[in-house]
Length: 283
Image 1 (cartoon, helix red, strand yellow):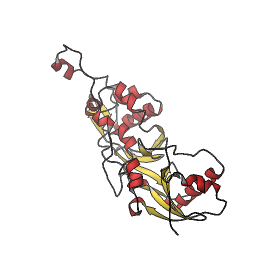
Image 2: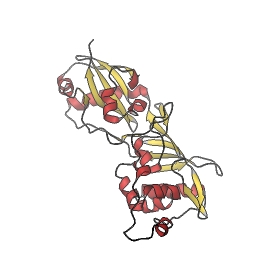
Image 3: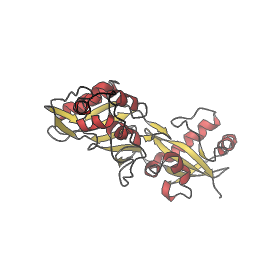
Image 4: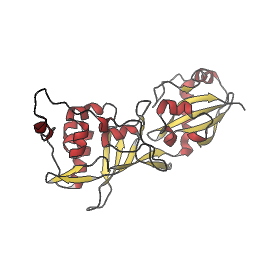
């Protein structure tokens, strides 16, 4: 079994759903580029409506659960099932006010992580902790959405029951072990030579995209070597300009020797690594 590494608090994408205050996490806790759910514009009142009345009118029905664990289970079940009105009804009053409406909440899911499965791993009576799986994603809009994460849920009591407190909820993303980063580069090279479509990342190749055509024509052997963190690389701005500063938390650079020597920038995609950039190097 390959070793996994974690970063406390997931990527910007999950922050859209849970309102996490930091991106990438772990040893680093850089603030995310964006938090649409925290900055959502409330639905305006119609002209002539008394403001005091609007301020005390619930946005949408809130449906607290009978316990903290029941709230988490109901929330995740609704998210997995695409029933976003139900998950919105399980959020705290503060979260719901910040978001504005169930419709805004639904719209945000176009760029937020989609949970696919979960299991509760905490002891009864303790704060709820789940191991949760997500549809992995890599793009320049949300960065990296990990394929799985350990979530420490924060809940609060309201209206006679329990609801989810997104801001207090903490996430540890699970990423593949760095020792498999070279295998990700090898897979990418095979895809180039076989003219197969890329897997995981469908954006524009960063750095020197024209190099991919040259590598595809080479018949020699390429050997992936040392893996380093992005901030130890000579030109990290190639990646951070595209993905934002939080890329330093999860992007890695693999040195490759062969008919053409190059550095490959890789990022996690589920349990694998995918190439998002290449730069030729001097032997």
